Length: 120
Image (tube, rainbow, N blue to C red; front, side):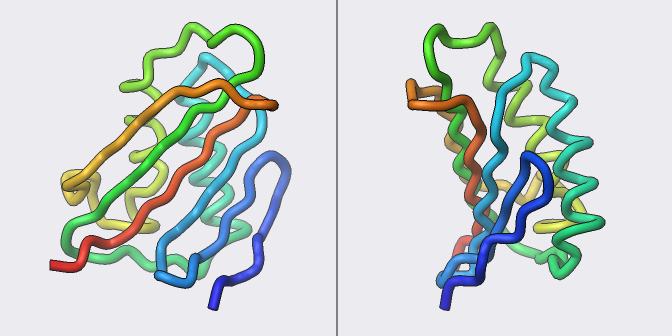
């Protein structure tokens, strides 16, 4: 069963049927550290049911933009988003065994992320 979306401000998240964490964030900024603080606060205040897991994880991140692509290094975006998951989804980002980060044109600006445990 898929859980309902929980939203606060620009961030919303849910647990999928497979047990993965799905997160969206509306809007874009080139200040990638902004996302780390924004998501950490969201997980602390509005989505506290997360408990860090152990083992390997897969994380898929998509930066969507309308118009011209923003001047943003995807590796810096990924680092900020992975840091926001530390202590919430997994203990440390060294547990990420698979990482896909992409940029694509869309109807509106935003970030989408899916983090899930890898079954071995």
